[in-house]
Amino acid sequence: MARPSFAAVLLDAIQKRCSFLVWAAGQLGIGDRVDVWCGRAEEIGNQDRARFGFDAVVARGFGPPAQTVECGAPLLRPGGRLVISEPPEDREWPAGPLAAVGLVHEPDVAAGVVVLRRDGEVDDRYPRRIKIQQRTPLF
Image 1: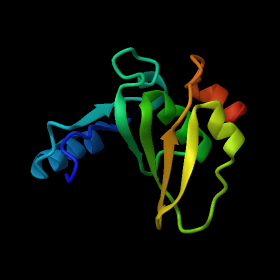
Image 2: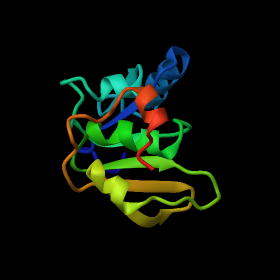
Image 3: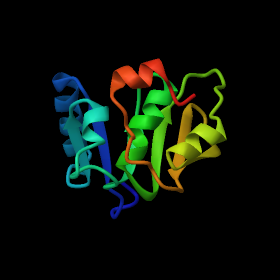
């Protein structure tokens, strides 16, 4: 809300949660800057209307970190942020696999949150279909 020029997209595959997010954004007065898309992230990330189109992607309870990274990176403009809600235990965010999808880790942003910044190119093959991500995760 403090950055009126900042746009974000919230993704969820469940319609009931999408409806709530639309309502909440409207109540906060940021509905014109927050898009809520209901669908599978790996499909949306391959759509022309979404690919490299957003300043921020917020992921909470999405899935394993490698899948979150692979699905979120193709949605970000250069310099955009992937913000991931994180469990209390520490987790590794390996630089090599992150770089493969154009991301770098911004350490120590806030407790319980991981922020990854798009600092490189994202190969056209990402995001891969979910079955492929599960068989051969980025990390």
